[in-house]
Image (cartoon, rainbow, N blue to C red):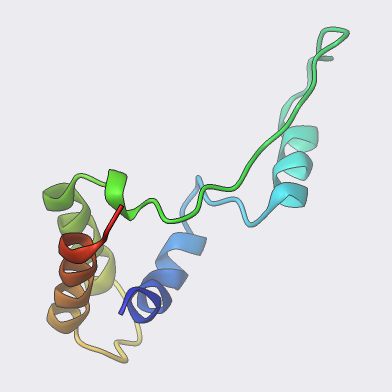
Length: 95
C-alpha cells in the first residue's frame, strides 16, 4: 500500500521546491546556488533518509497528502482510497 500511495503522490513530490532526486542533484544545486566560496576545510555531504513514515505527524501528514492528491491531474485511484492506504500504513508501521 505504501508503494501505491507513493506512486500516486510522486508527481506532486517531484515538483516541490525542496525535492532533491539524489546526491548528484544535491551537489549540482549547491554548485549553482552557493556563490560565495566555502571556507577551507569544509566538507559537504548528504545522506538519504528512508522510511520516514514513523516521524510524520499523522494528522498533518494525512491532510497534506489529501491536498496533494486532490491536485492531481490524473487520479488513477481516488483520493479517499489513497488516503485510507496512507492511514493504514501509518497506523500499522512497526518501528
